[in-house]
Image (cartoon, rainbow, N blue to C red):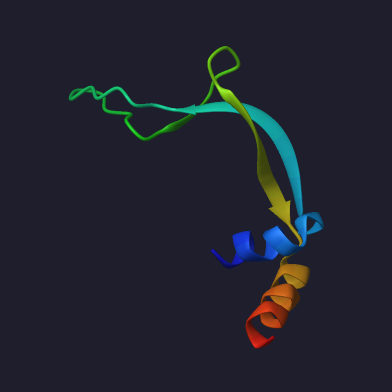
Length: 68
C-alpha cells in the first residue's frame, strides 16, 4: 500500500508497461481461477502495470508523506 500512495504523488518512482488484462469471474469447482488477473489482448482492458520501483526513492517519499 505505501508504494501506491507514493506513486500517486510521484509516478516517476516506477517504470510501467501497458497490458490488456481482465479478471477471471467464472467459477469452476475443479479448476477454479476466479479472481485471477489474466493478460487478454482480445477481451482485456488496457492498464499500466508497475514493473519496477526505485526502492530508496520510494522509501524517502513515503517518509516525507507520513511526516508532513
